[in-house]
Length: 68
Image (cartoon, rainbow, N blue to C red):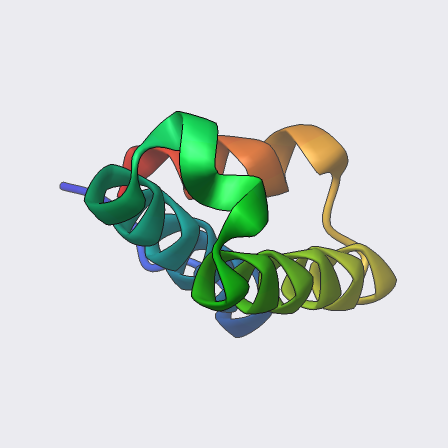
């Protein structure tokens, strides 16, 4: 029943999930010191901006990022 996400929103959702996956591996307290997590965070921020520039609302983007 879930509808397909627009590509820019789906890209952010996947990037946000990548951050969570890395955070789970290294521990939340260690994220800022982990180069992989920091790189993933930059990607997630870029995908968020891409989705905003494509006309999607902040609420829509963040909601998609939490669903994965």
